Amino acid sequence: MKPVNKGRSILGLNVHGEAKPDLLERLGEFCSYCECPGAAQQLHVEHIYAQAKTAHPNLSKAWRNFLIACGTCNTYKSKHLGNDRQRKLLKKFLWPHLDNTFRAFKYFPDGRVEIPAGLKPEIRTLAESTREMVGLLKSPAVTTDYAGTSIAFDGLQKRKKAWGIAQRARTAYLENQTPGQLESLLDNANQTGYFSIWMEIFQDLPPVRRELIRTFKADSFCFDQNTQPSTKGRL
Ligand SMILES: [Zn+2]
Image (tube, rainbow, N blue to C red; front, top):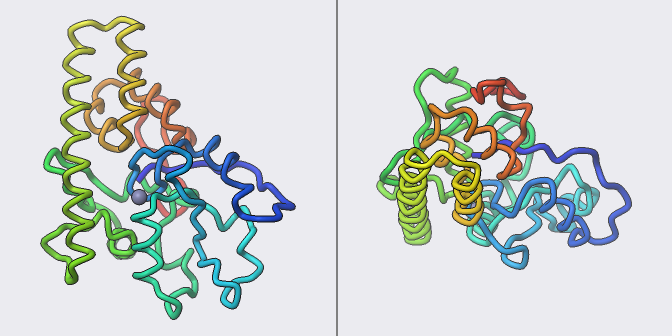
């Protein structure tokens, strides 16, 4: 899950839709949870705390309560949390604007997303809850309902496809390491989405990873000079 930097708050929003251009500018045109790409019209302003007026009226227009999400993640999250599990969300889950969520998940060629070994037990629990909340990152093998299973299979296929595209881009780049080839690689990455997959494929090539971090608008403070993940928040 790509860590992001939302930057300074934007105050005085009248409706939450007004935040969208600024969010897309700072976070990129990708879902904050599943990393899929999307046109501006397809991506939603995601309310971390649901915007139900009765539940959190003061957060419905608050910059700190926004991320960007695709329709699938947005819907699944609100269904999963319901109205009665909306307390202390910031503590109960990991968040890409608060934590270095890049360290919480590991992506595989077959589309799986697993939680890496070596995380502290309490962080592992948070990562598991987060994966569960978004639905898209969970394994089809462990879903319990039809909606969850079909979403999981869909996500799996998309990530598998992105992996193949990134792998082919790597081969082309290694054969021809020119600025032009790098530019086309970045265009390709931007269109394909799935930041974490591209980072995994290019893990031995920090110069390319630096450009990926920039292109995807990941939080640059979450990576050191060699593009290895550094600490942010609880990770
Ligand atoms: Zn999504």
